[in-house]
Amino acid sequence: MRTSDVVIVGASLSGAAAAKRLVDAGLETVILERQELPRHKICSGILSPRGHRFLLENFGPLPREALHEPTSCKGVTFHFPSMVSMSMDFFGGTTPHLHRKFSDHWAIKQSGAEVHDRTSFVGLEDKGDHVLVTARKQGQDILYKARTVIGADGPSSLVIRSVYPDYPKQIPWFFVGQKFHDIVDCPLDPQYFHFWFHPDLGHYTWSHARDGQQIVGVGFKRGDNFDARHKNVVRYLAEKHHVRLSEHTSHEGCAENFGPSLINRYVFGKGNVLITGQASGFLNMIGEGMSCTLHSGALAGEAVVEAGRRARPVQEVYRRMIASEVRRTTDQWNPLKIAFGRPHEADFPAALMKLSWRERGLVLRDIWRFILLYKEFKWGRQIALAAAQRLAAAGYPGGRWL
Image 1 (cartoon, rainbow, N blue to C red):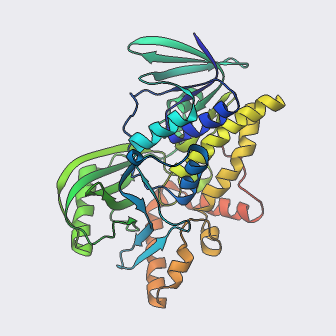
Image 2 (image 1 turned 30 degrees about the vertical axis):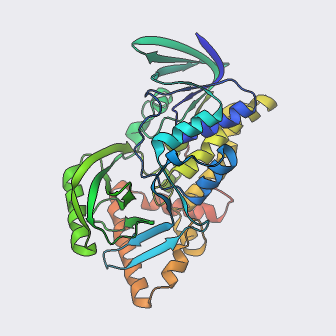
């Protein structure tokens, strides 16, 4: 049996952020990763200014191998069915275009934690004063004992399934896939991440340049046909934006727990088991999850340290600390905050005001029609309730969190 202070499941950016806090505080920390490192990670790699600042402040300058080409991104461009487009620069200037295979591995190494790769999480038992974790490596079971376990293993988290077996049935699941194309002609500005508010294209549709190719991505309700959805987007880009691409050279996809950030329905764990990062449900409005997962991971690590110093239950300390990240992330989906505040890292209201009155009307109409795409999930009332609660409080209530 391997004994340590903390076991982190998942060599992710959130896992690295948690590990950095723990190791800096002198706690023995072991990270379990089922794949061999450096491992591939499905992600567009567009990082927000806040996430970039976190990496610089906590891990130092990124090495060149941790970046795709183009190496930076200026901001986001929104496209609408009315053919109005809005480009918005990030407030903090250009940000890195992360190559997640190498950026995650770099951050994990910088954290100073002990890493056990090719080691798959199997299950856990919370004994009250410690947690027993069963893992498997090369067909052999390995037992770990730790005071605390942190699940940083992404949307399809096995750690969540260990503590809340029914959770996956309680939320809608989406499939997010992207295909890579050689470029024949692409007028889309390669310095921007492009997003389409178009209900006929899918629940989440994007495109941007990467390493001499163009990514065409689409997200939709799980169970739909990926190839058909993707072909529809490629056809639309050709007809409406004059984008000419070759047949795709490769593709990838994954399941996503898209929705908790919209409706304040996060999952943070139970007892001595903390859940953090995208496993918890953190996702920014443009689909960038790295900045909020970095910060939530760091808060998970800080909660373990603080709980030990004050002899308080770690779950109690974590939920108090994580409320700030919930506020920041859910504000990005709050219609009142969007309309009257600046919750994002690019100025949507300012970009909207630059349009003519006619164009503004078209954009608002298109956004409303896009929002109706989510009607079947009955999120409207939940978003409205969270927005109303936010008016009267400094944050969002934790009563709906698991």
